[in-house]
Image (cartoon, rainbow, N blue to C red; front, side, top):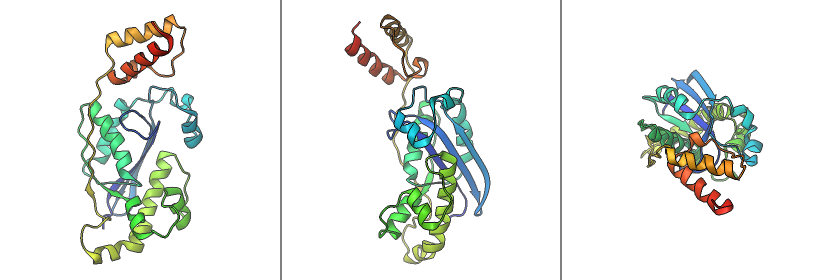
Length: 238
């Protein structure tokens, strides 16, 4: 069993770490089964949120207007998780977003992790769902879904319930225990920042066609800028 780890949870603009962005981070440090530190921050994704994301999380564009960008907050998250296993419900999802952000900043992020979703799928196959909200209702865990710190706290409590109920059985069965950290693997390719010619072209297109863009040109990557230029040229012409 593992009783020391950092549980992380993210809210994002979508499900793809290659094209979507982090908008909120929550982290809970647990040492010898005691919560010793909590941390949360909103993150400016450099783009407007889709309505479905605001409906899901309650986070609005105005909430993010003065938030730091990922480059500012990433060192703190990496420092908080250094030397610790990660815990999460579908932990590879959160890890992949952080790994992508780290690679973009030329930082290393290699961690081991424990996934409460995998544990629940193995030991609670009879349940109609193994989502975090459903499991919290099943175990009577207080939970406000789709906010990062609240989800991280809930995942800690879920892990404790699962460990008490199934941990000893898992150890007796032998093999690689799902309650122990395993290496997390996600291959991320670095995106370079938007180039000066790309920025100039986007500003000119926006000015020429009187457009109000729903993203910050200065925060685009080179590939994102290429996609936006192609979209604007196709829709409005030169």
